Image 1 (cartoon, rainbow, N blue to C red):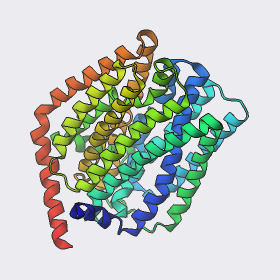
Image 2: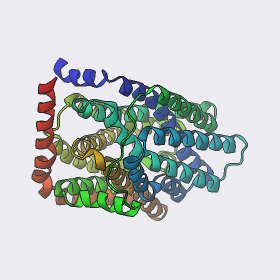
Image 3: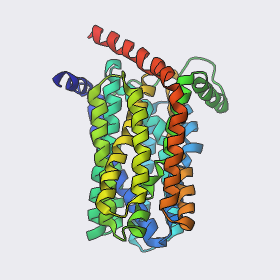
Image 4: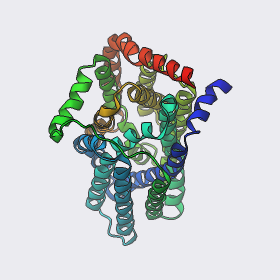
Length: 422
């Protein structure tokens, strides 16, 4: 066990990574507080499953159309400067939303457009954020650092909604949003203490942005195992991930409860995710991760179905905990494998497409499921989504050996070489 924790200790010996992860964790708590507040406000203002889904769609869909452009920028320009700029814009967006709520000017239209603005900025930031992690640590620490970065995201998913539920219940949603704005101020300041070499773009003749994006697509398509991984996680993101954005509708329509129950369920997702993230980061190697991803994808689909079927809050809480664990194993393990298998010169473009597929797909899924739930109730659309997940997993089982060869063998060889040089 001590040997396994040594991988985390090694990651934390990187000064830049420690400063980044400390400031970023607080900003992620604020992000999840605001997301919880926005989800609750969408239900409170509209009492419509469709509008809950539409606001989530506005927050997520820009990842598909904006993210790939900024993936090119992440490979062309200084990633640290882009991160500082984009997080400053997030601060402005959060403060504007706070003012709209505080002055009782909030309508579902305002909420939709402000969610869309945040979605645009977040879509631009995600490929930059993911591309930066390898610049903050040594190569041999990348597996542990990538996994632990995902852990902090999911710790914030646990802490943020719990705090937001308390704040919304006893004060107002405006205070949750204000905390988010202040948390962005802290991470913007942290960047001034992070000293990394400026990003050096390729010396090759510059290409058009469209050509660079096509190169990113070609890089994925030419590697069947990488293509299969993208497809598997897109299926999970399209049909399973929307559940986390529809929790406010379940709270209001199925459990007939308030923001405290929403915080309970969202925090249960985060608690399961924490356990999953720690498991992958402490594991510290790539061998066996493909099997874990496949098994966890199946558990994700089964717990989604059970959650949709139950009317018991306590069973639902346990199921959503298991759901959070399983879907996070898929996300953290797959992201770790992809990060460790791609060339740095292509990192921004490939990861921007990764974000577009795995985090943009829920935008379409939540809109479809929200529309169907408005007509059929919440149970049947989510059961259908679970069935489609299982069908996709069965289809991808044929690719598991090829994925093992591509992701696990070459990465374990690299890890052993890096360890021998220590």
